[in-house]
View 1 (tube, helix red, strand yellow):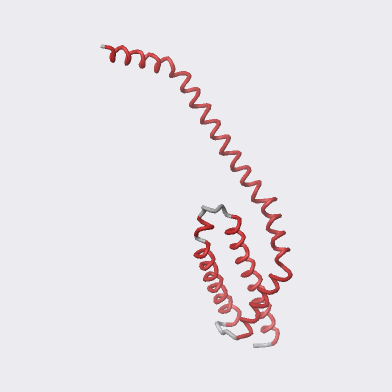
View 2: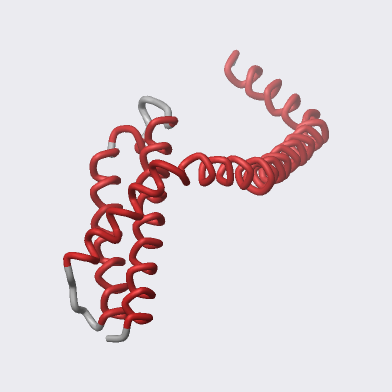
Length: 152
């Protein structure tokens, strides 16, 4: 393996460490801000453990691609360096980018979705009120006939 290939594999593993730390931070942030009785809060340990397992599988697949499955202690140190880089320098940048994505993309999508749901709900209410208006005389007559039958 040439020096440039080694550098590329170490840089790739550092980047995977940064991405792994960002994923774990995202999971912890989701569970922290989740409502107390939600599934995210109650199943936090299972969710985080499954995330760690998926990150381990992803790292193994990355090692298969980059180094043909060979694992060296330098790989562990590279990923640890990526985790530390994220915690020390990149956490604020990633969280800022996440807030921007949330405010500019996710919240407008949810707003439009809720707006469509409210519109559909109002249309359904309008249809049922129109149906009730036109069926009122029939219902009124049926109730009067029932009351007369019950009196006899």
